[in-house]
Each structure stands twice: as structure tokens, then as C-alpha cells.
Length: 398
Length: 230
Ligand SMILES: Nc1ncnc2c1ncn2[C@@H]1O[C@H](COP(=O)(O)OP(=O)(O)OP(=O)(O)O)[C@@H](O)[C@H]1O
Ligand SMILES: [Mg+2]
Image 1 (cartoon, protein in one colour):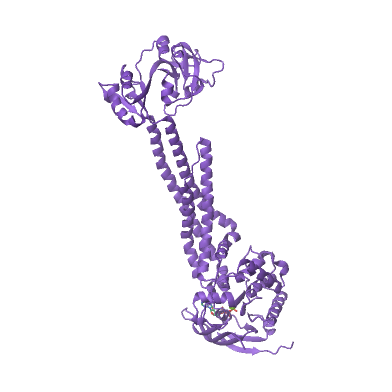
Image 2: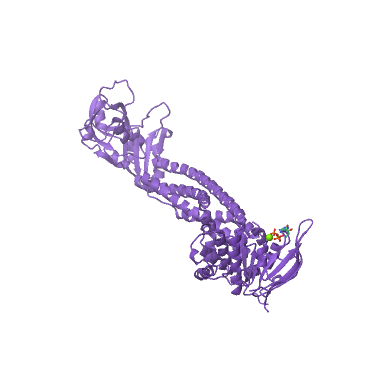
């Protein structure tokens, strides 16, 4: 006899419909089990998105700051205060071929105060540094208000405030021509700097002209820090010769640093944090997977009579397997998609708050959904096979 | 005559220690267009026999043929296909999907036959009309009375125009008035050509059917065909 007409058929679209039965009859339970996956995937996507966004922000920042800036300082041991460089070091450094520009600052032995009523002995004033007008350009700094020192103002009792120093002194604008009490003289504030990402020491300083320091404060100090801009391709070779150039006698007392390195180091430290959070996300995902498996096992137990009915209506074991596997995939897939949206949303919100560009890597988006589906498949397989293994009569007995 | 279902010396043992012999050698032939009752004490093997007739279970010994197919020659997947096209089931507990409309529950009777959704629904609507529920198409199971639910389940069983309908205690969850309505529906369906087997405890129901099979201890004790007065 030809049994070819005895084929039980289930269209893929109908299979998809059967996979939604559980979610339709028990929506809350379905939502809760998808939630676990959503949190896991959301955490992972957010971590990847945030790390990627901050990395791209860093690259942009490095681009803007330039990685060709070196700072030269005399090794300042603990308790020794600001050590100074030899007088002639700046001139020597300028003679190095690939050096494009230099600027230096020196520590002035004075503090800056908002008024002259503060007792001399009181500490907590703002540190004062002397500089030349080319400092701003060499550092690539910008003004929040007013102007930087120039050839003329560098010899007047005029001062430019670092962003933090301005804040501490309570000077937020140049309206009303503010003055500060600096080393026993009144100095006119002519400018306020924007924050200098790589030079927090200058952010906290009041900067006056070298000549003014000499004239009004009897300042006679050698440079404490020299800033060196080099040709971008020769940064390392310049860094190598800088110690011997700055102090031929004691080159090992000279510290040469590349400020952008600290940013990159901070980012590298971020990578370990990223890995940690990714691990936590993976654990959450695993827990979510166990949750789905749990819900599916319960669902198979509760829906024995439905399984029996479907077998009576002509479902094969395979149809039953597909139905429950499909249901697990659906829960996990919806959870995964929601997680990707959540993670991207968190990334976008945080990036907007930080003023970054939002960057959610495609790998995270695709990987998130794929990982969720894989978890769903693993979580659903055993319950689905159990459902299919039930004999129709066993299932119908309830 | 056209034989729809035949059991030949069917034995069913459940492999316990000692083995439980639920059917001890049953011979039974059912012709197209019959309406028969299966009665007998609890544990006599009625459900077991119905499951074997419906190919939900295979006999330990003996032969079963349904709609011209010998069950022993078919794979499990082919038995599923046989059920989807040739056998309709009605159960005591209805087994409707909650949260789904009467129409979709009935349309599921054709789910595994490969008929597209639109046609399934169209045929489900016709089947619901046959059982007198054309005004309840969109009601979900929980919005229906017990008798209405069983009518939906019967519509689901007949929507594919099966060769035979097997009902296990279809009125077991219903009061007597509602039960008579269901029995009347079986008579109507039978007059329209359906072959129906009804397992029942209720002597009033069995007495109203043209053929009554008595089971006892897994054997057919009597098989009587009545001349109905009408
Ligand atoms: N899966 C099983 N395993 C072991 N024994 C079973 C199994 N199913 C049924 N039996 C036994 O087979 C016998 C017949 O059971 P069956 O369910 O067919 O009876 P029934 O006539 O339908 O009874 P009822 O009127 O109570 O529904 C009973 O003794 C029962 O205990
Ligand atoms: Mg029974």
C-alpha cells in the first residue's frame, strides 16, 4: 500500500504561530523569562557600547591634543618640591632638530588670593607660575574668557587663571575687571583658560608673565617644566635625547613624559573593567538562560494535555520539538532584541551626558541577538525533547 | 459495506510487574456511518481501546486497521498523518486552548494537514455552524459554557471530515440536560454521514445509540445492534 498521502504537515508560518501559544496564554511568565536575557544582553551591549564610545572619544581627543607633546621636568622627589631645570636647558632643547616649539613655566614663590585680607600665613592660596606668551599655543589650549598673555601684558601685573583656579577664586567672568592679590601686589585678571586635559597642574595655577614676575615679585627661578612639540614622526627619538640635552651633567635626574600616555593607560585600565563587566553580563545571561530552561520545563509539565491534544490532531514528535524549541527561541530572541535596545539606549544616554558620539559596535548588536538565540536553543532543547518524548496517551492522561 | 475500523484479536498489556492486561483479545469491526457506544465498568479497558483505535497507542498483539491502513505497517510519523486526516477526537476535558477564539480552536483541527490558515478558518466557521455555534466564533474558551466548549471540541474533531470520530466520555463534565444536547448533536452528525464511537458511563446515553459494545476485563462481553423505533 502506498502511504504517501499520510503526511502530517505544518507550514513554517503555522509553526511560528504554535511557538507563540505559551507567550499568549501566559504573557507575564513569558515576559519575566525574557527579562533575564534582556538584562544579560543589555549589560553586555552597554559595556561594549560604552567602551567603544569612550575609545572613539579618546582617539578624537588624542587627535585634538596631539600626541607629539613632551614635558621635561627635573625629577621631583617626594618632599623636594618643584625641582628646577638648568638655566640653559630651554635653549639647548630648542636646538634639537625635530623640535617644532618649546614653552616653559617656572614656579613663582607666591600665592594668589581673592582679597588682601587673608593673613599671609594662611595656606590654601592658588599657586603662581610664570610663563611666556607662547605657552598657550604650544599646549594647544583655548580661552574660556578674555585673552592670554602677550608681549605687552607679560610685563604688566596681569594674570591668566587656570580653569580650576578661576573656580576656586570665584571668578567666572571678566566683567567688572576682577583683580587678585598675588604676592603682595594687585594683578588684573585678563583671561581664564579652558580646562587643559593633560595639564591639571596648570588648571590649578595663576599664570603671570615671566617679565612681570621678575619685576613685581623678584622672581628669579629657572624653568620647572619645559613643554616640547616635536615632529610627529620623531617623538620617540626626541624623547630619547631630551634628558642628556636638558641636563648633560645629570641626565638621569630629568623626567620626560608624554602626557597623552596617561590617557591611553587609563583607557587600558578601562579594558580590564570592560572585561570584568562583560563577564558579569555573561553570568546574567547564563542565569537568564537557566530561567528560560526552567520556565520551559514547567511549561511542558503544565501543558501535557495540550501536547496530547496536538498529537491526537496529528502533530509528529518533531512538530512538538519544534514548537517548544521555537518558544524558547522566541523568548530568548525577544529578550535579546530588547537587551540590544536597552544596551544601546544606555550607551546613547551616557554618551549624550558625556558629550561623546554614540558608538554601539555592530558585533555587539548582532552578537547580542545571536548569543540570546544560542542560549534559547540550549535552554529549550531539553524541555522540547522531553515534550516530544511523551507518548500521546501519557500526555492525554494529564 | 465499507469498513472504517477493524480490531483483530487486539491485546494491550502495560509492562508492570505483574503486567496489566487492559485488553485481552478484542475483535471489532466498525462500518462507515455507524454510531456506537462503548460501555463497561471503570478499568474495563474502554479508554485503552479508544486510544488504540485512534492510533495514539499500538497494541501489544493483534491487528488494527483504520480507513484501510494497517497500523502495524505505518511509522509513527505516518500514524500522525493518519490521525490528522482520518481520525477526530473528542475528550472529556475538551482541551481547548485558553486565550484563543472558538474559531481558531476549531481551525487547529486542520493544523497538521497542511491546509492554509484562511481555508482552515473558513472550514472552521462552517464546522461551528454545524454544531450550532455560528454566533460564538470570536468567543474565547473561557467565555463559553461547558456544553458550548464541548461543541467547539466536536467541531474541531469533525472539521477535517475524518473517517471516524472517537469520543471518550464526552459528557463526563456536563450536566444531564447539556449531555442530551451533545448526544443529539452526535445523532445529527451521524445522520449527515459521520462514523462515531462514544465511550460513556451513562446508560441513558448508550441506550439511545444504535449499537452498544459492553467491555469487561478487557474483553467484549456483548455487542448489540438495536432496531431503533424511529
Ligand atoms: N499507562 C498505564 N500503565 C499501567 N496500567 C494502565 C495504564 N493505562 C491504563 N492502565 C490500566 O488498564 C486498565 C484499563 O484502563 P482504561 O483507562 O482503559 O479503563 P477505562 O475503561 O477507560 O476506565 P474508566 O471508565 O475509569 O475511564 C486499568 O486497569 C488501568 O489501571
Ligand atoms: Mg477511561
